[in-house]
Structure formats: structure tokens, C-alpha cells
Length: 277
Length: 251
Image (cartoon, rainbow over all chains, first blue to last red; front, side, top):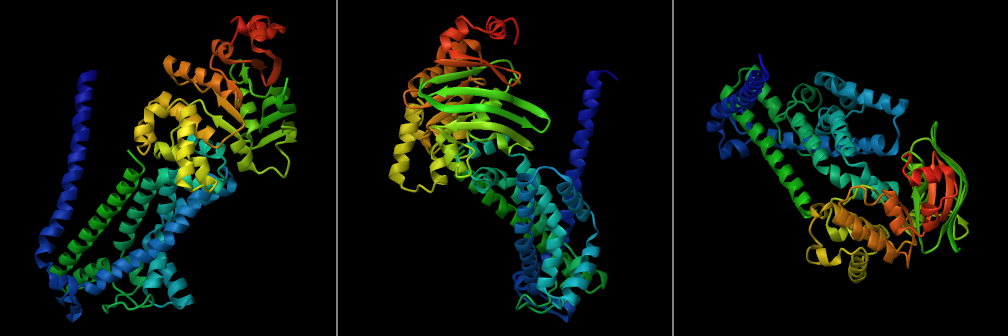
């Protein structure tokens, strides 16, 4: 094969790979949408489930999903960004930082059901939170923390060293340097990590069943047990309650994640535009 | 010679790397001093020592002393942010922070907590004027500084350093990444700035050193080999090594 042919072959291969990915993605989302959307009505979105979910709507699970995702992010985002700033800006590479990095990376590879088991033992039983939004949110926070740390670290490390030098040379303290020169530049990357984590948190099932429960009531406080959309989908499908409602729930879940992605992107773009382009 | 900064038996190392070796040097007030010599001679290390940026590097270690107006810059009573604002620094690579031109210039003032819009406006105009950038950007102060050309960004960097009202200006090869026309503009600017500021420049060529310097110091392997008036050092160096470098026999 000469260079020309190799080039053509390589192009054909990567084109096929990209197209195949697109097709698969469309197929997955498409099937859920086609089977689910017809049952998504206003009553479905705002009603409460009846007869174990065979009839009625899914409002409690929408609220449960959002509440759980928010609690997880509210806890994991400051912890994760804080750790990332510490690791990148406040320490030089040492045995301790290598240990922390190795730890977070290992944590990212732990199956979610293990987090669920831990959450059940520690938050639900030991701290006596019971099955609740709080216990579930805390468990999910632990689960997504490594992702937030890693992505924030990567984003911070791509900020040019020159920004730091300039900031210091103009009399910034380390903290001022971080907040005025580093974080604004790293923001888009950090937000991407947070959004990814939110997606993971709201679509989680195993860890959530153990820690937030499967109750179908409307949540009234952080200590209410809730059922998320993902869990609702799982139970409806596995227990053969209603495939129609299961797909409808799945469609709503996908749309929710899509809306949050779009919203966050718009927010980041607004910030960048303000900085002047 | 009226001395602004006095460096006394100063040595600097980063871990095992010895950057400066027992340097003693007086920096004259309101003049341009060129620190020149081959790469890895300790020129940047010296500049970064004067505003204490060197100690940000891991495993930095120094001995000896540096005095500004007779006061040690390493004294415990010295407030680091204040010191760094008294000693402005411009780097080889032009750096526009990702914000508007206006916000770039007032960066140090914002850190100091200055919020008075009128005062900020004044500083922006005065600093950009001094850095010969004002007429080019006056109509678009609120647009991103990232859209400026390399030469403009470097003059913005100088304006940003001047905005903090420093007494000393350290320039580490400020024209290394610039085209000839931008280089000339910055050299001309330096000559006018020395009336108000003490300037230390690492020139990017001996020709540049000869054009702008009132005084010059030749650095080789972390040592200050020779110091003298610019014209004397470039025309009739005393030390054989300086002569070899100036006449282009090495470096």
C-alpha cells in the first residue's frame, strides 16, 4: 500500500467509526423517544403515580431526580474544585499528592453498587438518615467526586503558566491569583466536568436504590425517601408493571439531561462573551 | 552613581541547579541597565530575584542580600504584594489576560481594592499613553485583549505593569517574540520611561543592549563578569570573556 492508499484507507476507517457512533447514538435515543414520547403528556409530567406506576404520572420521580442531583452537586462541586485547586496550585508534586491522585483515580473505577452499599451502611444506618434524599445525595456526591476533581485538575493545568506569572508580578496573593487569573480561564472545563457528573448522578440506579429508597410519595424534606426517574424506569421494566410508562419515563430523563446540558453551555458562553471576544 | 538597588553576594539555586553564584551588582537609579550574556547565564534568575518571583519555584534557595533604597527586600517586615507592585515585570512572551483591555490595565489596582471609576479611567489612559498604546485602543477598551497583535499585547503588558505605579521596571527579553517595528517602538518607549523609572532589561541581542542601555552587566554561568557604562562595555570591555562575547566569538 502506498502513502496515498494508506491515507484513503485511514480516512475511510475513521469516517466509518464516526458515522457508526452517530448511528448507534441516534438509534438508542431514537428508540426510547419513539416508544416513550407518545405517552408523555402534561398529566404524565404533573401527575402522581397510581397503581405502582401502571397509571398516573411521574412528578415525584422528576422532583426526586432533580433533588438528588442537586444535593450531590452542591456537595461534590465545592469539594472537588477545592481539592483540584489544592493539588494543582498549592502543592508541588510529592508522595502525598501522588497518593491522593492515585486514590481518586481508583475511586473513579469503583462500581456504583459498592458506593451504594457504603452509603447504605454509613449514611442510612450508621448516621441514621434512613432512605432519604440526603443519604442518596451524599452517596452520589462521593461517586462523582473523582470525576469532578480530575476534570477540574485538567482544566486548571491547561491555564498558561504565564497567567500565573503576570498575576503574581502584579502583587496578587496565591488566592487572588487563583480566583482572578486561573479559575476564570478554567471555568468552561470545570463546568463540563460538573455537567458530566450531574448526568451520571441522575441516571444512577444501583447506588440510589440502596440509599434513597424507592418510595413513590412526593418528597417533602431532605429526609424524605424518593424514587428517581432512572429507578422508576428500572422497576417498571423489571417487574413488568408497564413498559409503556417505563419508556415514557426514560424519554423524560433523557430530555432532562439534554436541557441541563444546553442550559449549562449557554451559561458558560454568556460568561465567556462577557469576558470579551 | 545614584544606586536604586544593590545586590550583595547573592547566590540562587533551584534544587541542585545553581543559577546565580555570588553576584554583587549595583543598579543605578533612573537609568537603563542591560543584563546580557549567553543563555542559562542567570539573567532571568536575577530579574526574578529582584521582585522575589524566584522563590515561587520549587526548592528555591538563596543566600546574600538585595537592597532597594537601602532596605533589604527579604526583611520580614516586607509585604510581598507591595514589593511586587513597586517592581513591575514584563515577560518575554506577551501575555494578555483573558479579559478586556481595560481590565488588564487595572488588574493590580483592582487587587488593591481601588473601585473609584474616575481614578481607574485616569490610570488606564495614563498607563496606555506611557506604553504608546492609547491611540490604538482608546475606542475599544472594553473588547477582549486577546484580539490585540503580539506587539500591542506586549505594550499592554508594559502598561499593566506601569498602572501599579512601580519604581522599577524589569523587562525579561520584552521584544524576543516581536517583529522589528514593534521592537523599535518599545525601545523608544524605554528611553522615555527611564526619566521616571529604574529599568533593568535583558535585551534579546547585543545590538539592542547597545541601543538602549546606559549601563550594562555581562553575565556568564551565573556570575557577573563585568559591569560598566554601556558604551564602554560594548566598545572597550576589560574582561577577555566579555570581549569574546561582544565581538561574537561565542554565544
